[in-house]
Every structure is written in structure tokens, then in C-alpha cells.
Image (cartoon, helix red, strand yellow):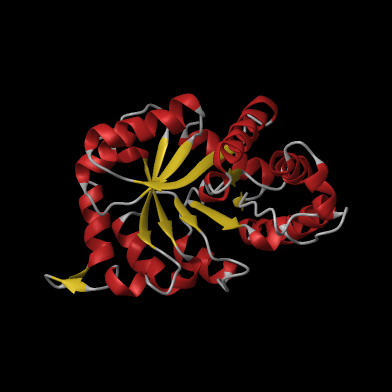
Length: 271
């Protein structure tokens, strides 16, 4: 999917909502546990109920890998279902990969060619040759960790070296990499006060913003400091939507929760 197609969907749906499909078998409705593939059945119901309200879905691969080969098959069935039924939806493999060049190439092939995701999250710690293999894929997007929403972000990301915070150096450096136009960045909603500085460095890039909802991030603050002329934001919500109910009405409850966020986004876009 191209960036232009993503922007078109944002305008059409009046939404820049991304829904995280982080499935924990201990949290899904009990009646689904009787199904042959409860993870996929849960995802399918959530997707069917919410696809008109969001522009992206983001399965975190850890929640599938934890269940071994069965979990990986559930992930594969989920992305195949999305691509077959809702091809206009932007898909994110939240895998946070990153390794030496030949290994990164294989990671990229796994998510872009085999599973056919539109994007994958990566860690920048190993530098240029660990990220550029992902950037080489046409019409695919690499979403690099920049400033995350967890408390440990302050351990390294905001440390000052040579007069500049590390996360800013990461942003500046990544702009020089080959095919950097395929980069997006992860910036946590709980770090909204940093967004103005981030936009000074990468004014045109899309930002994937986790942390709205359960982690306490504020949508209005994120939009105030982070939105650009193409919106440039994908606001992720996971637990606040998919676990809105543990009863048989879980999909309807997820829809209602997603609608609340989408309505706020529509109001922001109209203003």
C-alpha cells in the first residue's frame, strides 16, 4: 500500500485509528475457547465489527509466537483474511525486528513476501545496515522505534550526547538512509510534549502512536503537536477496544469503543 492510498482511507473514513490485535487467550470470551482456532475467530469478529472505523490493524507478533506454531498459523490466517476481505486496510506486523543485513533481509521477506503485511516495526539500535534491507521493498513501510511510551524509554532514548538527545540523532540519521521515504516512526502518546521537536525533524513522515487509552495518552495533545497536512498519524488502541467486553457481545462492545475514538478523530479532522 502506498502512503497516498493510506491518506485516502483516512479522508474517506474520517479516521486515523489503528487497532492492535494483541490476543491473550486468558482475556478473550470463554465461549471462543471451544473453537478450533479461538485466536483467529476472535480477530475475525473484531475485524468484521470495526473495519469501517479504522484504517489499520496491528497484530503484535509476540501474542502469536507465545502459542507456538498454532499461534503463527492464527497470525497467518488473520493477515490472509484482512488482505482478502479488507485490502484497503493498512496492516502492521508489530515485530520490532532488527539484525545484521542478511538476517534483516530474511525478516523482511517473512513479513512482506510470505505474510504480505504492508509494514513492520523495527528497532534502530544496530543502525543503517539493519534497517535498509526492510526499506528496499517497494510500497512497503518500515516503522522504526523513535521515542516509545514505556517508562524505560528514558534509560537511553532521551540521553544527551554531543548536545542532542539520542532519539533526535536517530531521527536525523535515518533520513540519510537509502529509501528513507519508506520510513515511518513509533512515537508514544505518553510523550506528546516531544512531538513538536520531532515534527521539526521529520515533518512529513507518518507516526505510529501507541499509548492512547489504557496507557494514559491524550488524543488531543498528540494531534495538537503531531498532526501534519496529511494527518500523518496512526493512533493505536489495543486493550481499550478489543477487550471492551468478555461476554458474547465482545465484538459489538469493541465496535462501540472504536466508534468513540473515531468520533473524536472526525471532530478533530473537521476542525
